[in-house]
Image (tube, rainbow, N blue to C red; front, side, top):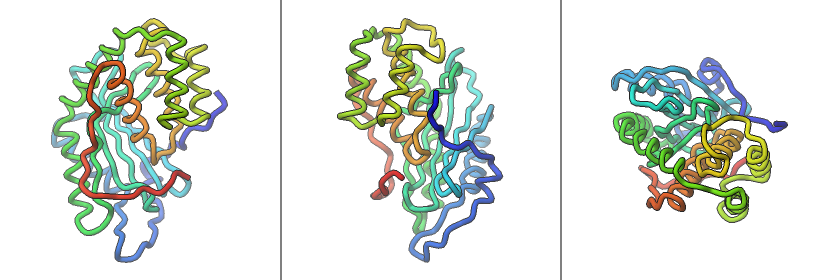
Length: 257
């Protein structure tokens, strides 16, 4: 495709990443801690991990984890995942969400609430633990809701011309995709990389073209953008109300770099 994806790294790379010094006002929460705590809580709720993928920017200042989970009620073409994002450079606070992935292409679906931990001061560790558990405790209901959205999108016709218009809207007005990703969506509409087992002029096909493009998001923004897109599609085409984030503290994010 000719575009650069976020760099995939190993668990040990994140665990050994050098920690910055921000002084007493900001406590760094280690990527290693989040990895171990997530696995611990998943085990407590009897979830088994099928595959783990970790990505990061240079020096692992911003990292993301995607854990593909075994789920007995998953459909043949989608599965459950748990995702998180964390930073050492204060550009984004910890966030996590239960979502779904499309098996044929690993496109991700993030819906419902994204749990945000408190900025890394004082009780940050406790808040992060609680937010991870909140998502995992409610994993089945969140996943079932996403599955139903997928079914409903499959039932919605979406002409090529309409897809062109929505792609432009996502780029110009909503700013959910950038110009590089808009070009990827265009390429996918003309010649899909995967078979989504549905008509090309269908909302589910278009959904996958966009989520395929969102794979190129910076680790800091991938979850936020994925949720914004899911909310857009389900609000516009399924008549659902947007879902706010579960937020434990006010926080100003730095601009993307």
